[in-house]
Image 1 (cartoon, rainbow, N blue to C red):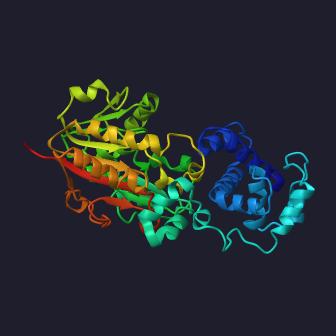
Image 2: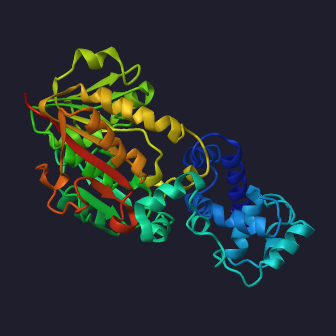
Image 3: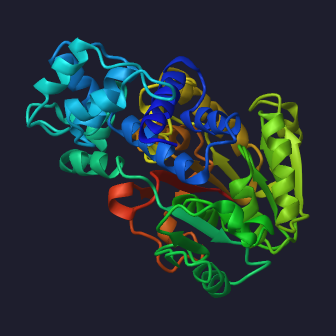
Length: 433
């Protein structure tokens, strides 16, 4: 692709993201699938630019509003090219000339706007903290309450792309063998700092060249997610429920911890997504998993199996604020329920799933959120209403995690403090009669 053609592709994808109610990663993947002629190098460059523009969304809007320019995908694109890529107005006029495979010609008002940006950078001292940190209004106060003086540092950490974390399947390979195999592919890879099954890759390799992924010997999973699964601490032969299993990432980890023995039930209300996870289970060589679609969190199956399971994991649907590094568009685009819907839903899911836990068994509640309302406050309300459960401090729950971060009674991870996605987990135990 020519430089102008790359810019045109970036702008096309940004327009699609603006007008299509789907996640940015799905839109970007679909764009490239329908244009097989675009080579891998060009795909990488275009994707990187698109996501970088998404990570600068609030600041780009701020500059457009400051100079009363139209706040549009094209406006953000031009501002990004000027302030981040440092393209001059003349260079942009040459790249945006309206010819075949190039963006539309630069208008006179657009050129004047770009000239007014002379001498500026993307950041400005008069920007509010929330704008500088790319934080939407709906989350700002809660995050300020959570992080206090570290608010700006945490937001800054959420602006950096996440590393590629992998989890080895101990039924197929050791961590050392996987590390050696990946290094032979000339990847910059190291042991993850906290998870005993984790590896961290400091680049974005072509995943189709990693045979270990195809064979189910390793899986892509953020280290924070790995720690959540480890806190469940299921034993071989036990009965376990992954209540909100989704695509099955944590189910895979739990089953491997159980050494393929006992029984794990993967539940979810998204039946199609749940069924697709079956291929991942087979590839990993796991056969102690049962897939169970639910009509809702109150499905009659739950009542029929109350007090039947040793471990129940509730990875609750949430705002996803902890994954903003990976999904920068989710800060600004309402593609799912808001907090007013999520908070009562989380409470209902937790209450219903708790019925499955037998006496002496454990209930683990987790989110990929940084907001206290979805985390600590949910646990406080649950314990107040369910005195038959007690919180087990994560450092005392017996899980084999030698390097578990010390974050108090609950696991509370953040990108700035731990270089993981933002994760929360609480371990609770049903008292014996």
